[in-house]
Length: 370
Image (cartoon, rainbow, N blue to C red; front, side, top):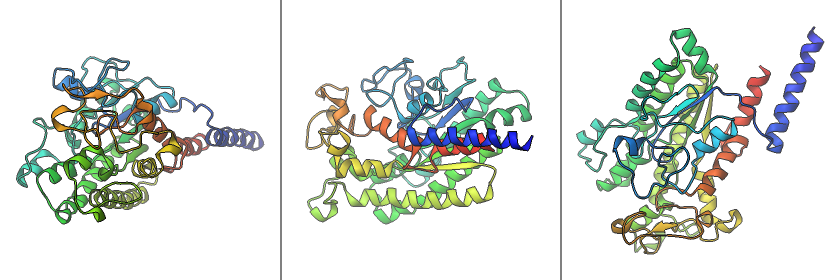
């Protein structure tokens, strides 16, 4: 009997190792995916909440708007694990038995009360912060399972993607003319809020949680356009990115990784994956041609002109803006968000490495064995 079990275990190990190494299709391991975050993973909530389709959000099946010319990382993760694209949670009456997306464009890790109390007013008119998204999760949970044990069992075989969070928090502070030092004082609060949110999901029975870090804000066309500097020393000569804004993202990501390592030690029954947006984007900026981005990483595909093709008065979809003929040759779609091509690349690196710690495929491999 023990010998037979060993044969099965070895077979599973070989299958899973091949899955990681060769890029073979992943098994439909998860019964559902639940996503939280902002515009980098919003698949329609902002549009539904605002009761109207924004012009720079093209339709993509199912017909809900995304801030890109196509699929996002969360879409590629769903496809990789054999699940349907996640419906936005605001689309009431939908069957959420295979997952839901709670992410909303403009969402913050901190509640909007924090910004009002600190005299920061460039915030969304409605509260879709992390804590609100977790409340929406509780509402949808009631349509998926009935008892505590049933829910815990269901969520133990679901994948949770928690973020990106924090980028909007810092962006709103920059717009309020906060100094670098003052913006950095937000980071511990943002990270603590995120960890608290993750723990709430773990308490619900979640076991596998992917937590993306921040993107390099200093490489994004909107930042380069809004905060230009005459001092060339403020730009990274290898990328052309603004170092000050990237330093906040680096600080956030470093503190987040430390906090996630501590959380992993406290909750050894879980697998918490840190997913890296920052490093691949920096690689795109340093050597765009190596990744097929012949138009570079700092110029938007869709925009209204200027050095980075970003213009506040003629942003993507508004009069005066034009769309490029080759979006796959660009990293940036609209001066803020990415095109489908880099999202596909990043999703693959989160699944098979090297930009997820540990890669999702290895997490699944280990669970298949044990």
